[in-house]
Length: 371
Image (cartoon, rainbow, N blue to C red; front, side, top):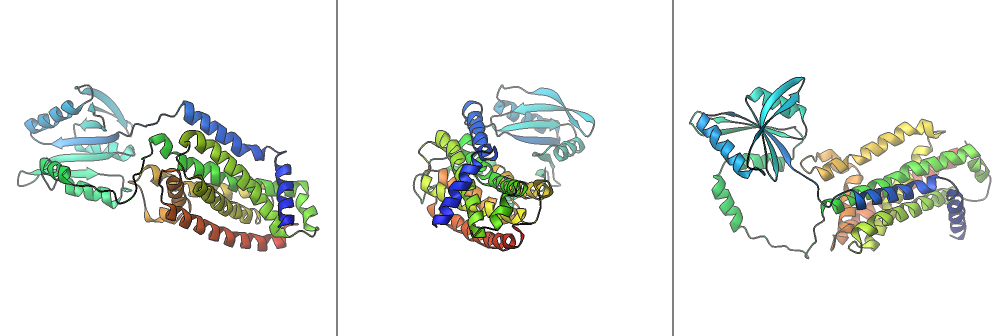
């Protein structure tokens, strides 16, 4: 342990003389400045709905009257949309929750829904018995829950559904939880990228920089263990990622997060990502050769962010990616009274996976350290 500590201090001093050491900290300060002075606490989340009718004129007028009653300025306007090179005139309404576009025909509505994502299209007509018939056009990635809502929505009278909803009694089984605003809800995504994934690129850059300067070849003939060299590199990454993460979290979230659990998750996930970076670097001679793989891995790891911000898009395969539970773990850590058990389980998973990757990297480096 004494040798490992001295190796870590040595690597930390060497790293502090190069610009890689300050990349994460600079990024954290830049992100913090943007969030404090530019990003609002709440974002506009109005959905786009494209609608066409095949109804008697009186019924269409009734729908449009309802739209006007809920419009923010109490009137509609005619605007032009472009879809696949075609200019389409539509009647536009905007409520507090929706942007509604009324099309003259079904074909234009479908075309616009297909070309503008995310959005939903609807065609309203009469069935053979004279009842209302609704056809919805979606993007294909919507969750089964959302699809079921559309199915149930028109099976009951709306007034009846509203009355049933008002009678529902909701009881919280857990402690009182303070909800995150839109700005705070973005913090887990920032921690995943700047606090964990950036370490993947930086540790690979450190390894190739050592190779280029001959440090690795000199290290290979010493009595020090290979794993100590790798752990010292990981230690530097964990140090910078922890500092940069606290720079982001503390001014935005202040004293609401559980910083002990947050630190545990940062360290275990950072260890996992760093070990992955070490393993990837062992297969290549320089950063240019490894760049494509690193870039691909980081893009794949960032995909769960889409599901995080768009809950309607959550395919089963996205849950297999390690950043999916990481995002939820960070969210629980920064919330008041977050789920401690979940955070510890996710941290344990990253620790075990990181150890397995570290063992694999250690085996590789014993053979290739001086290559």
